[in-house]
Each structure stands twice: as C-alpha cells, then as structure tokens.
Image (cartoon, rainbow over all chains, first blue to last red; front, side, top):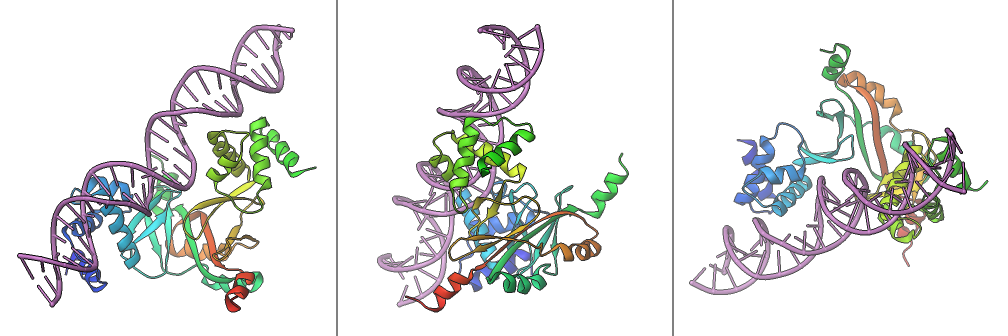
Length: 142
Length: 142
DNA sequence: GTCTCAGTTGAGACATAGTATCAACTTGCC
DNA sequence: GGCAAGTTGATACTATGTCTCAACTGAGAC
C-alpha cells in the first residue's frame, strides 16, 4: 500500500472525506524530499487552492501525519513525520531535520514541576546544530 | 538608578544612541507588568512609530534586556527578563510566564550529540502548564 | 556656532503565515 | 432525485514583522 493510500485510509477512519483536492495536497507533500513551507506547497500544488492546502496541512498535522518544525530563523516548516511525542534536530548548515527518538526533557520535567509548583502539561523543544556532513565540509573547505 | 537609566546606559555602552523614541519604548516596556505583544506596545506607545517600536524591541532583545516567549497558542510575546540562557514556564491558565533557572536539557545534549553525530549549537525550549494558583482555582470552582 | 555625516525615525509598502467568510460545489444517504 | 453536511476556492482579513526612503537628529570636527 502506498503512503498516499495509507494516509487516505487514516483520513477516512477519522471521518474525513478523501477528496481530489486532499489527495493532491497529500501527494504534493509526499513528493517533497524534505521539509516545506505551507505557502510554497500551495504554490506548487495545482490541484488545490491556497486555503485548502493550509486546511489540509492542519488536518494532517492534527492526525499526526505531518508535523511543524520551527527553523533556526524562526520560520515554520512542515515535514512528514511519525506521530507521537518527539523532537527535532535541525541542521543549521543544510537544513536537514532529523527526528529525535528520546525526549530530552522528560526526566527533568518532574524536578521542574516540584520546584515551581506548576503542573506541566506540555513542552516545545527544538535543537539546532550542524550535522556530520556539514561539519566535515566546514573542516575541509573546497 | 532606575531601570530606564540602567537600560539606557547599556544601550550607550553598546554604541547605540539613547533617543526620545527609544526611551519612550523602554518606558512603555517597563510599565508592562507582564508579557506583551509587539503590536500592542506599538499601539500604546505614543512616543514612537510602529517600525521604531519593533526595531527597539529587536535591539533590546539582542542586548538581552527583553526576551521572546512563544505562548501556548503559538503567538509570540515579549517580556523583560534577565539575560543569559534560560527557559520559560508559561501558565496556560493565566498566561503568567516564569523564568526557569536551570536549563532542562543541558545534561541531555551531549548524549544527543553523541547519538546523532550533530554538533549542537543551540536549542529552544518552552514549557507549558498550570501554575499553583490556577490549579487551586480549578479544584475549587466558584 | 555651524557643518557634516552617520545613526535614527516614521510613514507606508511589502512579506509571510496563516484564518475567516461565503457562495458554490460534491458526496453520501434516504 | 433531493437533502444535508462536508468541502472547496477566491478573497479579504489579521498578525507579526521587515524594508525603503526621505527627513530628522545629534555628536564631533572645525
């Protein structure tokens, strides 16, 4: 089963219709090799209007099919990603985004809750750095 | 020495002029008891134009006088804060923002760097929860 | 004092990232 | 077929900034 079909089934299972516009947006997202801006997708995706592209991205985001990453410069991007709680490691050199398996702060949350009196409900974490390839490039310039 | 004078000195020490417009923006920021939106400040601050308010906020942000917090709903706010690396604990009930002394992820960064091969340069963390007062309100409703 | 030049300002245009509105269209179901 | 609900796309609007550019200001040189 293709990714497109898989996602279509998830949509249907959640009570949403799988329309040609939505299939076009999903196909456009799957065709992207890396993260993308919503507006950029809207421009490239001829099968759906801008509002529909934004709506579909939000829908897929709610379903956990895509997730939002805040880049180094503060701009939001989206990428196809596994669902569930995870964080991202963004390369400031090439822009690659890598999923992080472990949640780096889960252990610290109880300490913070105890110290602050807060009942912690959620958190947002992005990590920025240089991937191995970009480090190698920096060391041995052309 | 007042906070306004203190910040003015910091500006001068960094090579910036302390103009009436900048003083007006700084005074407006200091008058705010809690976090504020840049546009809201621009509307309230009659001593400076909108562009100048945004420019001054960015300037103060660079100097570490104010810092940017991303609220629960994704909207950016600013608050007067100490400089240096720290994080925020945002109450989803009343919107209060509390500085966190410790960096919750500093310990985990080396592990992540080792596992991923990334050279980690920075990170962004916001924590969301309910402060003690809001928890009490929720338990004993009116 | 005044000249000069860099820094600063404000108005307004523009950019980006969305959301809201609403009439028209589509689809599933009776 | 017809109805109701879901969906769409064009467009307007909001929020949060940045950019441009002419005008202004102020600090130091003379």
